[in-house]
Length: 224
Image 1 (spheres, rainbow, N blue to C red):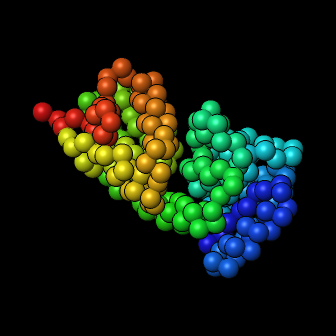
Image 2 (cartoon, rainbow, N blue to C red):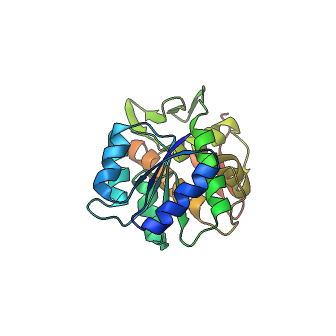
């Protein structure tokens, strides 16, 4: 597995490279935005570990540029920017996960492995409800001739909802199934993604698709 580490703190970059190499990853390191961008578009990686604040080009801009090019390489932000508006911004530009500094190496390895494993899974189903059509193979949702592209996490959330249509899915199930590890039950990561997913659906239609059972989870109504 090939990993691109983008980190301008050279000591931390070296530590990350050493840890990942010891866990059988092939590692490329970039310490500024320009070199990171050149590596990202010039080679294929199984995942990118991306710092937020970088010389020349910020990590946010790199992530946004890659997504606009259609690049779906899993991206994990590793950053000291821990405020909720930073998390939301990171997810909005297409990040798949977000880990704040300081962090535990074991957690980073688990999150990274989960991102890579899930990115290699190929959904094969097309679902429809209330006029919406969801193509999980292409990460697109359609309504009345219009379409919206979804991030991998948004697509995974909608896929899980459709697979269990008519049933309420608890928050812990989303966190376990989609993120693939034990998540802090107090985290609002899922809520952030649900908000962004609903925003994209609202742009297509005022028809409500995703319902909330307050304090418990989310569901799509069964078709009558």
